[in-house]
Length: 198
Image (tube, rainbow, N blue to C red; front, side):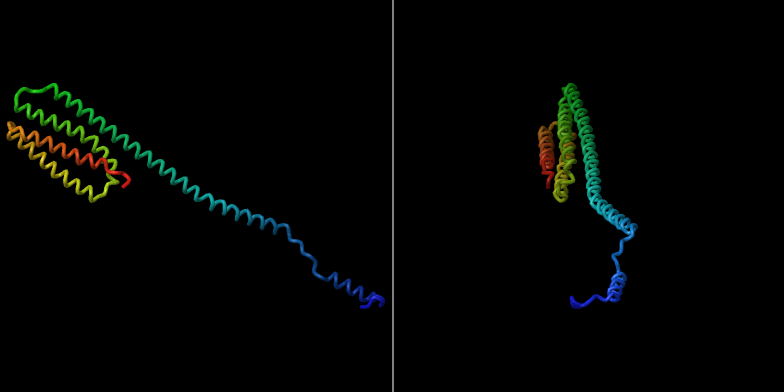
């Protein structure tokens, strides 16, 4: 269309009708926005639940760890208390035996053996307490080897006691028995000193 040409009214009307028929911008219904908002909030809630779950699991493990630590501590305390009571009882028996010494040589030998045995048991109580707390951290094969050695020492102790009963005048047997007890205490001491971090 040239600028000089007159505008045809029919064409203008026709053009206006076509413009009116063109699609206009649709307004979204209000309920569509509310459904989008609810979807967004549900998605956010799920994301928060997922992020909260690991913290909840960590807190649950921490609670169990604290409870287990308390149970172990109370068990150790009870074991220590029991061992202390046994040690006190043995110490009282030793003191009682010291006051009741006999003059007869045969009874004196038996008294020395009994006193030696009570002193050995008193020393063994503390070591066994330490060993029982470390037992799970000690290598099983090493533990079996040490138990075999202790079995041999216990047999020797038993044989020496029998020999002392049969020959109470032999002064060498009590000395050997003392050495055997000292050997067993040395083995138990090494076992009690094993590093618990193994």
